[in-house]
Image (cartoon, rainbow, N blue to C red; front, side, top):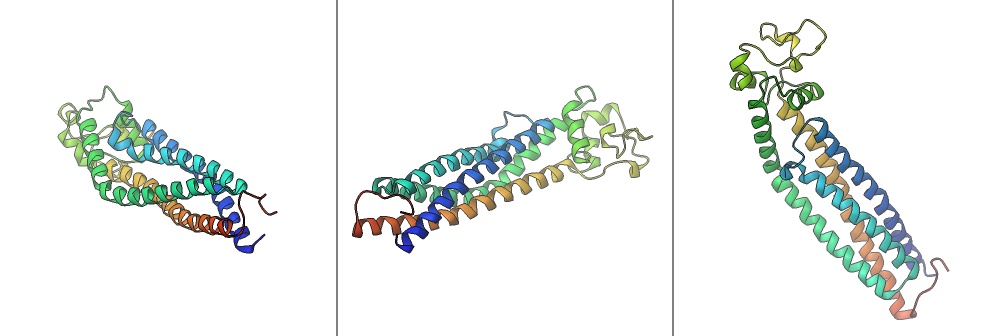
Amino acid sequence: MDCRIASSKTVLLFLSLLFWAVGAALAYTGGHLIEIYSNLGINPHDKVILSPAIIIIAFSVVMFLFGLLGCCATFWESKFCLSIFFWILFVIFAAEVVVLVLSFIYQNKINSEMGKTLNATFSKYDGNDKEIVDNLQSELKCCGVFNYTSWLNTNWSASHPNSVPKSCCKNMNATCNGTLTDLNLLHLNGCETKLQGIMHHVFYYAMGVILVFAILKFLGMLSVCVIACSNGSRRSGYEPLYA
């Protein structure tokens, strides 16, 4: 077999197998992000905040289908299958570039919506429905939306002056009762910054994976062109992979 064809098939086969691996990684990342939302008590019906996780999981499904089609096109070496694979690679390559651009454009909007959601949730906190806010503050080791002083403008402050919920305490089993007389016992940083930090970490990880695969898809398109052109000039039909 021609060295160029063998190399191109190796690239396509490697790319197909890698699609499955990254699809699994993206599915795990999207699921983990949804799990984080659930543990922090964030509304699962908020489409704006959930959009990164939904996009990541959708891409994981696309990666799996890509891998399946790539393997079939590589082993069959059919011009028809290779043509379909090329155009799908091209379309997804273009889509990934668009997603990268739009993700950076709408990142600030997601942060803004997250801030609004946190403000609405914290402002309604009165100590009775504790699960959402207390879990958020305990898990992220934070206090208030922007910082601990955010509690001074909530329903909590009206009934508990000069104090914050006990979930702001660094050690809830100690003598800390949430009063502002001893700030050394409290987490002082806000939850919005901490939550955005988690979001940015997951976001840049996912965008990095998408960028790498956009580059690999470009190489895959070149490999398809090499195989298709060689088939057109030397033979028709197909032959086994590495025959």
